[in-house]
Image (cartoon, rainbow, N blue to C red; front, side, top):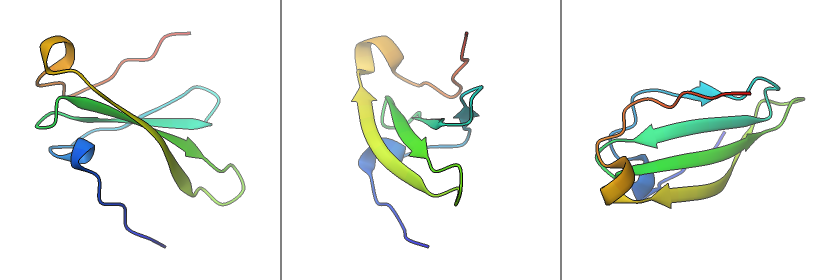
Length: 68
């Protein structure tokens, strides 16, 4: 197990898992960011792939709703 320190996770309180289980999305409301992790199906390990930060568009984000 490892610990990820990422400023984009500041204020993270919820997660959303893609329907296929391959990705986990974590909004950081204090960071005005959404963090994307790839999930290893065999181990459940998460690999940080991307942080999208845009205070003007997603400032204060608390939840993510996935479609598709």
